[in-house]
Image: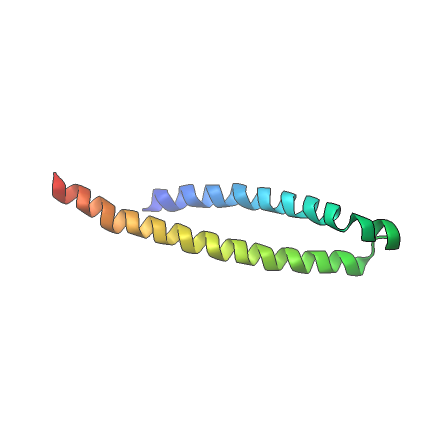
Length: 86
């Protein structure tokens, strides 16, 4: 089970990097009109960062709920059934 968590954390790390890069690219493209019209300010970057944190926490929560459920089901039920069938 420790190996499963290690692999899952590695996947989480890469998905987090991908999420971060894609979020900031999306926010730049999405708010380009406002940035061009009003300029960029510390307040706007602060709002972007707040949205990033909110979405990142949601991403993290759902990723680990699904991952933990999958790991526990596999290790507790599937492996036990495989051992009993042999």
